[in-house]
Amino acid sequence: MVQEHSARRLHWDLRLEHEGVAASWAIPNGIPDDPGQNRKAVHTEDHPLEYLEFEGEIPKGEYGAGTMKIWDRGTYELEKWEAGKVMVRFDGERVRGRYALFRAGKEEKDWMIHRIDPPTEERDPFPESVLPMLAKPAPLPASDEGWAAEVQWEGVRAIAYCRPGRIKLRDRNLDDVTAQYPQVRRLSRQLGARDAVLDGVLAAFADYPVTYVIFDLLHLDGRDLTDEPYERRRELLEELGLEGEGWQTPQHSLGEARELLAASAERRLAGIVLKRLDSPYVPGKRSGAWLQVKSAVRAEEDPDQRSELAEAVAAGRKRARVHVGGQELGLSNLDKVLYPATGFSKGDLIEWYARMAEVLLPHLRGRPLTLKRYPNGVEGGHFYEKRCPKHRPEWVRTAPVWSERHKEEIDYCLAEDLPTLVWAANLADIELHTSLSLAKEIERPTAVVFDLDPGAPADVLDCAQVALWIRGMFDQLGLRSYPKTSGSKGIQLYLPLNTEVTYEQTKPFARAVAETLEAKFGDRVVSRMTKAERPGKVLVDWSQNDPHKTTVNVYSLRARERPTVSTPLEWDELEAACEAGEASRLVFDHADALRRVEERGDLFAPLLSEKQELPA
Image 1 (spheres, rainbow, N blue to C red):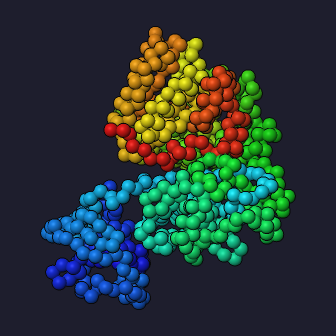
Image 2 (cartoon, rainbow, N blue to C red):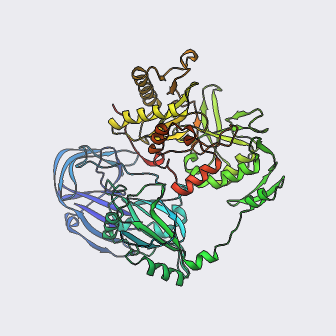
Image 3 (cartoon, rainbow, N blue to C red):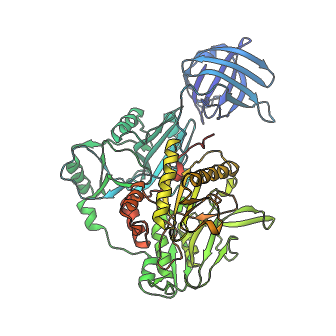
């Protein structure tokens, strides 16, 4: 018998009839359905057998006060029952298969539950960090056929990661904001034992506390729904019936976009969002499948305001004190030209990074940052700074990482918020170089990278062709990969993993891919750095897959003649550039990168959440 027990905290009571009593365990996060998920099981006192059929309310003031309902019932086959270990085979309506319960702590009550059998059905990995899909500003289309219309809710965009007995809210910068919205925590109780990932807005209404307004469903019970059409995702979302004191699921409308826009203007709301009924959910991307239509009233009210930072740069000041993200920063030498060929100044650098922060920060978060500083501009000298400067503000976060070279831990900077990004830019940190790992798990890369570097007279088009060959190899393996420009001469190709792998696995894999390419295309590809072999060929540099190395971060500026940017690409852009023979199609400066983000969103968003296994 398994009873869902909504007491002070939601949990599941597992009860097994044994020797005339109901042996009991309280399981806070539900019965695991995968061998990879050992879960806590608190061994409680034995209960009378009558408890096996109990469901209802336990009055306040009594032990276990709350609501209890039967979640699963059935029989079990006993394999082992001894002090500190129980092994059984469940045959329930929901739970089936072999399980082990075992002592795992100092106290008698400290147990764990483990599923021995493989899952009953294949499950997609539960995503841990998804960037929200974005809408493109647009006028109301002539026809709303094939579109759903929703009110555009103003507030904090947040993805809710709901698992049995727990919930985590992350904003669009992937910051954990769960503690700031306690009224939403009980949402996991309504979902019970179900896994779900929801998209919505934490909106404040007059005279009401903040409410989580839910409008999309990305994952449910082990199934990734992002490739499902919006219409199907909404059907599944509405079937969940998610309504509570701190959350709601408003209705959407079909064929009434104009009326909904007029109603939003009447109520002085921001406007509406139109979503194609057949559109998949593409994390981080801004596409024409979702349209943001402003109400006429709010469009008139929107002022053309410039931030303190933008005003300081526009005014041509040498120094300024500005408030950014709740912190006061002193900025210096704003008029100093860092790119003489274009006149791009240090003030321009700071403002540009501030404008890119929304898409850039998620890719920096948690990663040791190596500063590459150009105090005298790109034509002057530069230096790398791994150790976070001692004169940093107290709010700049750091992370200790062991250095084999120095035989000690080095405190690296972590650029996790806008003030830190602006502070680093004020140090003339033109280029941002990061590890393939998060600081907390420095031996575990989240991706494999291939740095494609042309040896003259080869150029970026040759790199693009090699990238397409590598993609073809990965397609055959069922793996998805994502290209970006290096911002310099070449192309970089990333294979997201976000799984339990180490460099001892990824580096040999990357080398094998590079050597396979060299064997097949030896006249155009080389896998070794030997200078004599480089001319006219593309080096597939696999050596970057190393805990002691860094790569230039996506959306980092580069210290070239012009302020070019390491820019994410779509595969058809590489194909088109190769067919046209136009290398210029694969070079983007600071203005191009801003425009692309506004039009397309973050094309590199899958690197943050997509889980893939390396082939054996």
